[in-house]
Length: 243
Ligand code: ZN
View 1 (cartoon, rainbow, N blue to C red):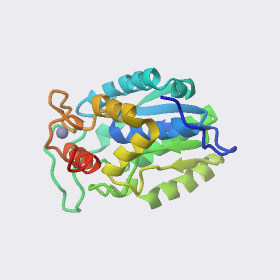
View 2 (view 1 turned 30 degrees about the vertical axis):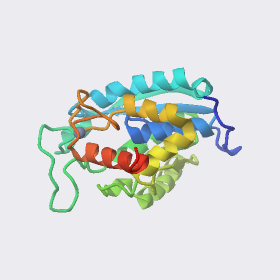
View 3 (view 1 turned 135 degrees about the horizontal axis):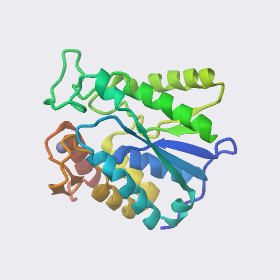
């Protein structure tokens, strides 16, 4: 696979990608590698119930380097920050051993209040130190969950607040903001062809229960948690009735 020409503007030569090891952030990473000559990655360890997702990160990075030599030249340092404090301040099924349910406010109990605000703030602090201008994140308004800290307005407000607060012009790039999961698969195909789609299916992890035993056409997972259902539905819409 040869990389397409760079589409970066002269002002933006480097990017920091919030990279969890899931489908969305891997697609965002490919998007960044296609655009920016220098790309670094950032993950957070906040006492997730299952470390499967964190374990997927180095595997995905290794596979990207092996299968896309042109991207390998652009892919720089990987950073992981310990955010165990997040598990201490929030009651959520992502960090505690409790069942999924919808809360009275209409949000699933996987919602960690302010999580993305913290993520973006720490990403900006790291980007500042690394001299990076663009922060890429896979937040999305079209998902079922409607997390308020994934909304476009939240990201725009953060971009202004962080740029003012650090006196450094940040751009928060959200390539998935207005597309659904089927379009996310299509975007991966556009960026890296079937090679990238196969890599994402095989090596990225999304399932809330950390299931790596059951292999489906769309990848590994329990098949019934909200994250699996979303990924499976997106996949079947992507491949269509003949897939
Ligand atoms: Zn699952």
